[in-house]
Image 1: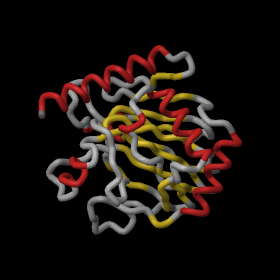
Image 2: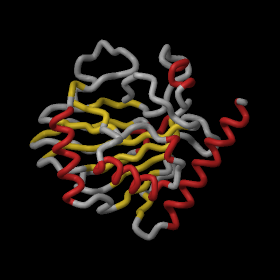
Image 3: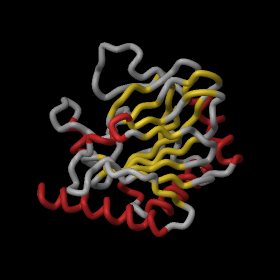
Length: 225
């Protein structure tokens, strides 16, 4: 079973990379360490504004799967977007159409809001099998493969998404989708995908994030991050 899982992660990594590379609306960010892409103007202004309104209504303090003693580690607010909402379904369809990953492998879209001073310090989107949460994550879809994040607006200052070990920093731009493979070419967790949501220095930052799993995902009443 382990071999099959790794083979799938390798295959989906290659498949999405090749698919995005052939898409004329998608730009590959130069990097020897990560497969990372930007789709400019992926969402319209109307779609972004509609999602921001929903986040404002539903947001609660963001959670973590692994406890930390650092109270400043993740200070944003977030919410799981309602998959029955027509706008959310529309966005789901657009992301699925871009990525080409089977919809059942995708987690519920999460909305996030960062006010001045709020941040998400350096972390990985992939799961560590050594952590206590792993048995639950393994049962409900296993490892994360690709991350798709859409910037819904641009704060006045700050709020970049930085990959410190890969030497990348991406500025928020309303409607742009940023996506990367959390696995390396061999289907193993890629440590170069360490990333952070830099502190917002002026204004507010809104994003949505959708993560994909190696197997079909099932909701098990757990807050993902």
